[in-house]
Image (cartoon, rainbow, N blue to C red):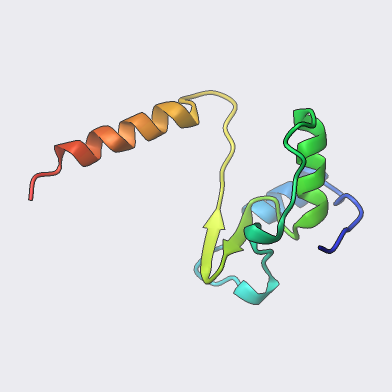
Length: 95
C-alpha cells in the first residue's frame, strides 16, 4: 500500500476535487477504494486523515471499473435514513 503525505485540503482544493465530472474523468487516475486501509478503531479525524493520505481525490474514486463519487452534507438525512428510504422504494416496485 502506498502512503502519501496528507493532501493540501484547502477550500479551493476541495472544491476542485468535488467538481470532477465522473463522465469524463480518466479512471486510471483514480484510487481504487479496495486498496485503502483504515484502522477503524481510530477517532474520526484520524480516519479521515488516513483516507486523504491514501487517495488522489476525497470525493471521486473507483471500485474496480466503476467510478464512485460521494457528497457530504452538514444537515439532512443520515445514511441510515437514506438506506431505509431506498429499501422502502424497492418494496413498492411491482413487476
